[in-house]
Image (cartoon, rainbow, N blue to C red; front, side):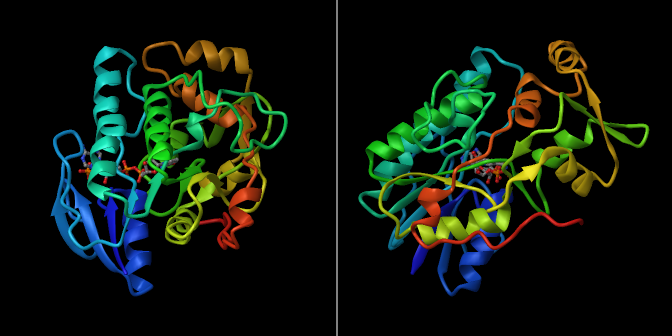
Length: 280
Ligand SMILES: NC(=O)c1ccc[n+]([C@@H]2O[C@H](COP(=O)([O-])OP(=O)(O)OC[C@H]3O[C@@H](n4cnc5c(N)ncnc54)[C@H](OP(=O)(O)O)[C@@H]3O)[C@@H](O)[C@H]2O)c1
């Protein structure tokens, strides 16, 4: 099978491209920079449609990712990749199966008292990232794509989560807002295996994460190797508004909202997330 992968120069797409090649797929890396394996098809999502040639399926991970200063320019920059780029990609896919990698950031902000299912409202997002991913996935769902919603992807080479988390370490302690909470995390290898399996799933949205409910403090201690101490949530929220802040409001939400994803729909397909968090 020939699989076109966008975002293969990035963290998740790179792992996916290597996993797909190991499984014997012919990989076409579609993006501004080459991926780690396979042929490179140059494409800027903000400009035009890629020519996907004889690809049998498409996995779309290219996205504007992050939590920059809010404002019109940020909103436009995110929209041009996550919304307009999605439209271009779906037109180019021309009926081929598409797996569109979304994010659990599309869900209405918490706190969450019960595991979040795919029918949880996807609105009121607090960042340009969440808003534009939500619009992008609406377009993808209307085009009969499979939409995956991973939460907090971790693994070797992670450019987003771990650098953000490292900012809370001071004096040999990780200073986290609010009390310990349960949460879902997604090993990048599990996201990659879901992307490949999902080429054959019925269209629709699916949560993707490790099949474990983690405790935040234990997970952070495992990853950072230092003990966790708590900062009152109100103090952390005010600090998130200040210049030179350690965490943004979105990052504070991510470690305090208690988001656990209900994996029932993805597991019912037979897919199994094999990896869990272990000390590095
Ligand atoms: N990491 C997480 O915790 C997480 C959680 C949930 C969902 N996701 C989703 O997973 C996907 C991959 O994220 P990631 O963590 O791997 O991020 P990443 O490392 O920042 O990779 C983003 C990818 O998108 C590409 N891209 C950005 N703008 C582009 C453009 N204009 N044209 C073509 N390609 C463009 C980048 O290409 P360049 O190399 O050219 O910049 C890169 O390959 C995204 O869809 C993201 O929403 C990630």
